[in-house]
Length: 327
Image (cartoon, rainbow, N blue to C red; front, side):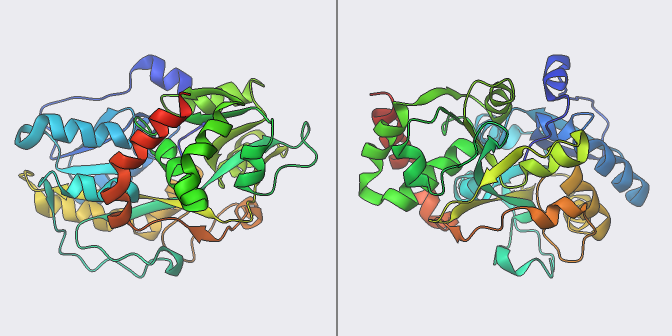
């Protein structure tokens, strides 16, 4: 999940940070390094641990991180990438720019079922449609019910955002070969498809739609930061697709040992205590102390596709969405 508070201001300020002398350079996304995101606290804590200088170079989204790697190739400036999700891991590995980390990572939360020699998960959540319970007393209880309804919906473009890709996998998982018809039905009551998560969520908060695609963890932000309880995630009977956010070392890094230290730090109790209340996602290790509202979040059944399945079919599913949702 991306930081909610003040993200508009962060984007307006142009958060990308560039310098020449950092010991460890991390490609990530804008909201992660915003004043309200986990980036600054993690940077301060890691620098105190390593006695080094960490620098973030931020782009818009996990999709943008992958695209930047593709464009820059072996000339990229990253030691670590942070913010690719599991749905993009196969495509990212295919660049040939990712280094196996060689670490013993764990134990991680069992529900992640995570086994990979290159990517380290640092948070996760379930895609969910958020609604305002002060306006909707009987929310839809399934993806099919939402798509069959006339409720106004905002979601993100799967070509440019990881949440949009998450919905793409969600629809494919529930509808299979009938996904094109589902996209056409959804388009009849879609308010807009935004480039990224923040644009969609900010429109929802100003009352532009009944439902917005976000995460099961989004209500925690409103309770903790705003003392607002009306925003809820609708649990769907078909289950929900998870997003696991990942970090990895680049094969072109000149400081791989420090990169490994950073990956290990990301799954430490210290880092995992910071991330859920700044990036508003779930920790990847057990026994992290969290605000009580995290215990009230929906805990959906996980459905979807493996990283290999998503990687093999992603382009086909994108073409299917583009041709169907535009009709």
